[in-house]
Figure 1 (cartoon, helix red, strand yellow):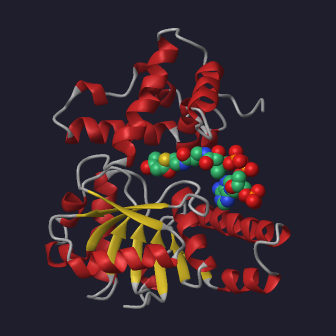
Figure 2 (cartoon, protein in one colour):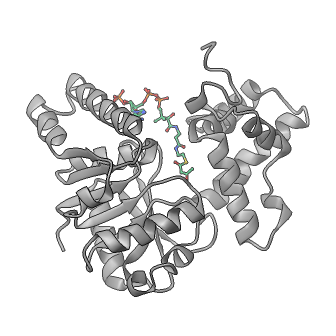
Length: 287
Ligand code: CAA
């Protein structure tokens, strides 16, 4: 099957990154979001990134114009119904995702793959709300920033067909990514490994082992991470980190090692969510 047009459900950081990556690789992409401000931000991000690619001579102006022409933005899912591939990239909340999956099932054609960019939620459980189409549901987990990060973690649910998996691998490669499989256990591989490390950095901070800047410097300089774990937590979103820990806690036998640290929970409760709110572990208002 040739993917001609992708509908990306959710115009946030991940959704807008997925749409841009598709367009740059020659695939039409429509961003669907009920929030017009979010769509405006996605459009602005696309314009800035394409202009940057031209100024860096990664792309010609003609190429950037062609990618821009492949992007569209709609508030109603029905207006994206001609897409022949869907990636859901909404908030990491199982009830919201389940209701979007029902809507996707009702909106798109009967052979369209219904992928999810979930970072931790069970694919089998999401597919359970649309049993007739469970063979077409798959996890297609991109990483932030999507245009830069090479990985797509591909997760099959219990009912996912081999055709759906093969198409997902092919599409990931067409989008310039390297697909790597993981099984359908909470957090998959990426967050099963990454999030406890981030969480431990919060514990280390709370225990007075070091201040955030020093924790991050130690992990950057000593372990060659591009960002330290606390800076990365701000970048991902502290609410997202907390939610992923809770998905793993609930999905992995309530093992207390997956409980989010009190320090992380407190910052989220205070509304300090990281880059997106201007303050998280670090205060970005002050630069
Ligand atoms: N969109 C597109 N391109 C972007 C970008 C974005 N949002 N952010 C950065 N880039 C590009 C920049 O344009 C730049 O390329 P050019 O200069 O050639 O144009 C390049 O990336 C490097 O960016 P910067 O020079 O601004 O900064 P940097 O060298 O510090 O790199 C970074 C920034 C790529 C984000 C780097 O710090 C990094 O790799 N950080 C770790 C990111 C990471 O771990 N991501 C995974 C998070 S986990 C996840 O996403 C999954 C989950 O489920 C939680």
